[in-house]
Amino acid sequence: MKNKFLFSIFLLLFVLFPNTSFLRAEVNKSSGRAEMLKAEITQILKEKETTRENGSKIKQQDLEVGILEGNLKGQRIVYKGISDLDVVSSNVYQVGDHVLLARSQDAEGNEIFYVTDYVRGNSLLWLLIIFIVAIIAVGGKMGFRALLSLAVSFFLIMKVLVPLVFLGYDPLLVGVFISFLVLMVLVYLTEGWNKKSHLAVLAIGISLVVTAILAYVFSDWSRLSGTAQEEATFLIDASKQAIDFHKLLLAAIIIGTLGVLDDVVIGQVEAVTQIREANPNLSNPQIFKMAMKVGRAHLGAIINTLFLAYAGASLPLILLFNLHQEPFLSFSQVINNEEIATEIVRTLVGVVGLCLSAPIATIMAVRYGQSKKNKG
Image (tube, rainbow, N blue to C red):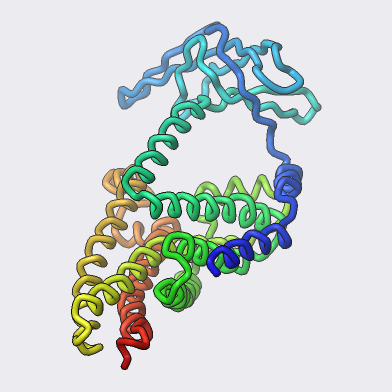
């Protein structure tokens, strides 16, 4: 049964989205973005170091770069990286460094090249290998299933959701559809095809619906446009298709909440199962009470984890608050800034959905999770 279900999922994907390379090509065509080429620094032509008023230093370079791929492979170009502009940061390159080279055209049709960043593929590949080995070594078959579900989820988001949004499809509808598929993959690949998995899928689905309603109500009430983040500005300029950024924000909240909901709900269903197996004579109210003790401890740990994760990711922004400069002179200005308000809504809605998921999953597992033998 489980194998038939997984086959049906993949068949559905290939029927609905038979050619993701076509979608990617259409996205690239519609966005008109520059071609990215791998290149190697062959010579440092000139360096300039500038000291700002606060004492920080920035170094700029003129570089000779050899192109390593494409129809310009083997050619060398000169990149003028020294300017009078005060850039936020600038990489300092050495001869032999592999870099990404943007190739585009100016208004007159002349080709221009720009060194954008390091090529980090090798280091990230080794980290990925260590990641895979660690999960399989500790998790065994369950770890392998988790990796497989992660790969399918990544495929669904990167190769289906992203291209469809760029092609003009409704971000919220696409986000809900992809979230449902990711939910099925996460649960059934890692937990198998059984009653516990069915209950977990149903409980997560209910919790996601509640989270989606809360996200819609409070994002609309707070007048969040979804364009506060810098990335939205780039998307507006890069995409020829109109994107509804408010719905994109809602989709992001739903997808972001899915991962933690999966953790809490499966944990609660498993807790109920283990408590019932340990003592079949316990009544349903007793099992619920004991399982919720586990759930509360789990929730406390996850909420702290979420806060620390958000704080770590937003550390530069937190430092900016303490400078007491525009637009962060007062607490009122801070919370009424759309970028900050967006993160507050995203975080609190996710946490509320998370808190509701524990009793929902526990009630369902207690009520419907027992076998016919135990009912008798």
